[in-house]
Image 1: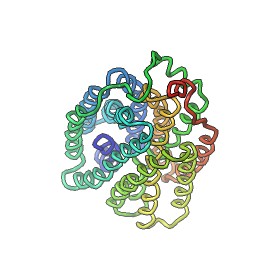
Image 2 (image 1 turned 135 degrees about the vertical axis):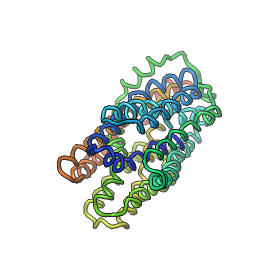
Image 3 (image 1 turned 90 degrees about the horizontal axis):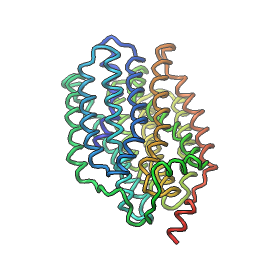
Image 4 (image 1 turned 30 degrees about the horizontal axis):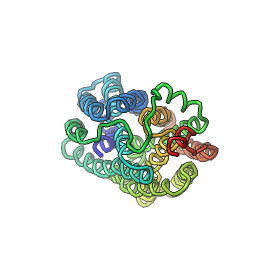
Length: 383
């Protein structure tokens, strides 16, 4: 809740920081793009460490790095300094406190019959953070200024350290037969599986959508002449509705095909974006879009992690999902940076919205051929 909640509010700083520092939007956007890329690059390594030693110390160390990066943003006087602090250091901190590490710990202590449901609940916690931190951070910015607000967030990240100590730390799953498979062998097995490759390709689109909207939507709302508070409330609304979306996604994944669920989510995202482009830009339209997108926001995560666990088992789930998530973060990098570049060149985000529509339809198609059946080695052990 804390880690993802803080991560979700950086878009609120785009306008005040660029105005105060005299930067263009691409400068800030590139920092956030680097952050997303380092999150993606770092997560497979964080996942491998968590799979080997447990999640506690990985997340605790990541929280320290996270706090250092957010504090460093207050000290950045140049674009390069912002890219190093808000981008590189914060991105690595997010990677080593990622909610997927906590999800892997949850998956190992929950039986197969309830695993998708538990993953949905864990994902909903991240959305709860978005609900809490979006209006709270906007209030901090209004009351104390953007720099003091960032210092408050930096201190808040440290709360993750004692919370991490409460996580189950055994990397083994009690209901899954143990094997002598190494992490290298697990990765080779996964990359040879066509469904794993398709899942990885599809998750790129999720990152493109989510990162673009998280960072640029508050500024987009201001650009169309609405109050900045509406942008903050819209991001909070996304998180609020995603609590329901994540739980419903977990429940649906427990009963029906996860790949079909993912196809539906990506297709409906495209429809929602198309509606935003075509409808009048009113406060109601913004809130309606936020609510619909909220239902679809992180609802991809229980289904994506669920397919990884279902096909390959949970022993190396954090590592294998980390690789899938790297694709997500490549999409995030492109979504955040390209939006800033397009806006600075054209004065509009229209090109990004249309790209999101096309990519959503593409992702809906890509997921359909995925084979969700567990690998023969898992079926043989369960028998």
